[in-house]
Image (cartoon, rainbow, N blue to C red; front, top):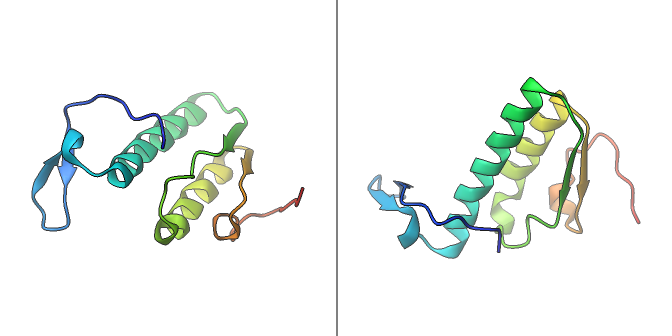
Length: 101
């Protein structure tokens, strides 16, 4: 799983009720943390453009979320160079250039 922080914030669940981060399931915590990480990278890249390397961070993210993640990575790629190492074809569908190792 991703490096999950110990935070006391939360979000809304499918029923619209506020849920504490600590009570979310592991996959939901990973999605929240992924959103925080991607937002932080986006803010940094806007201020100081730099290449971004993504490697192995997606391991616990459910396959159904891959199209959303692909869009997030594409958006980052519109601002800076993104090197995305992954073994799942569903995560590289929108890549401008693909290299198979």
